[in-house]
Image 1 (cartoon, one colour):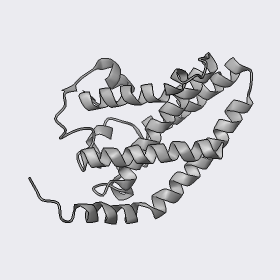
Image 2 (spheres, rainbow, N blue to C red):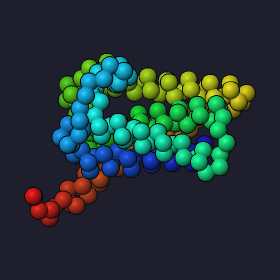
Image 3 (cartoon, one colour):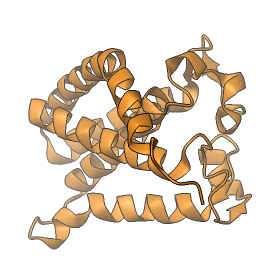
Image 4 (cartoon, rainbow, N blue to C red):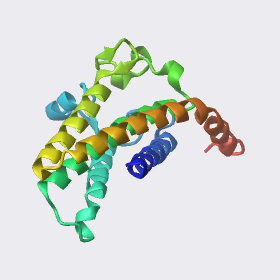
Length: 196
């Protein structure tokens, strides 16, 4: 359980840092040379955010990556599929939040609805956190519950809730202690870059 929590958090953090390298201060692929389209289905699922080519292929890649276990010998089952989708959704929530925490152009001080155009249409809980995050976590828990029911093993749900609690504690800890050193390293690595 703890190993799962640590691995998911590290995976989310590494991907958030990769996205910071790709997007910089321009979130939601704003300045990336990719297409931006309005999609009713995606807009409904993503609080009116536009679908971009970057996000389409990134989400498809990650979804496939989370399913790799089925191509190396693990037998597919409904219970396991629900667990994978549950962790996938949780990964997306954690990664998105860590993008703000570690991004030198944002940080927790700028993690506000009026500072983030792509979260502007989201509802926020007490102006602290997008409702999308809460929905994602709730959906993740719900899918894990259905996985437990499908496998007739409620221990799966309890272990997930334990892991989720541990992840939230770890997120709090790294949000306090790691962004400042990362931001120093971020600027140090760019110190002698030549502008093209």
